[in-house]
Each structure stands twice: as C-alpha cells, then as structure tokens.
Length: 120
Image 1 (cartoon, rainbow, N blue to C red):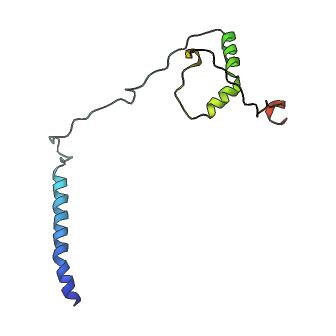
Image 2: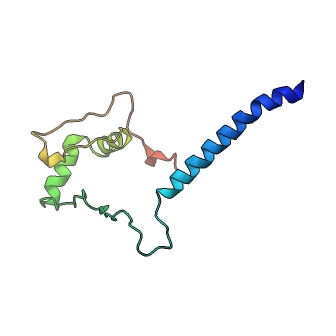
Image 3: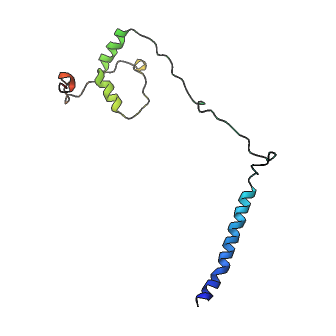
C-alpha cells in the first residue's frame, strides 16, 4: 500500500523540482557574467552623504554681561537642566525669541545646599 501512495506523490516532486530548476536558471540568465568585460551592467550613481548637510552659522556676539543677564532671566542653570531632560525638539535660540522668557523653578524643589553632594 505504501508504494502506491509514494508513486502518486512522485510526479509532484519531479514537477516541483523541475520548476525550481527552471526558475533558478531564469534568474541566473538575467545577470551578466562577472568575468565578461563586455557585459552590460547598470550605470553606477553616487549620492553624497553631505547632500542635505547644513553647516552651523556663527551667532551674533554680544557682551558677557548681556549673556549673563539673559541666563538669569530664563531661570539660570535649572532651566538648562530641565531643557536637557525634555525630548529632542528643534528649539529657536533664545536671541530669536519674541521677548524675554521667564522660567521659574518649581516650588517643591528647594535649591541644593552644601554643594549638592552632601559634603563628599
């Protein structure tokens, strides 16, 4: 009995094997021979990684006094620390803002005393 079942499947295996062989041959025929110097190959194109690069621009210089006053207006180092904890966003420079921005530290967090490292 088992020989009858296997004989029925045998033509299907031959057919599938033949089809796979034909497909492999057809796929290989589409490629040019790498050893043939006269073989036609697609033209190479190059796109620079720097195509969309935008360089940094110098900021307008100002006096150190104005810079320190602006840092004081926006909330000092705590404002910069909060900004660093936020998700990345494209932020306009403070000099481009429409007016002075005031950022007050939260009342629940008092300023650290003694250097913030518990005298270590």
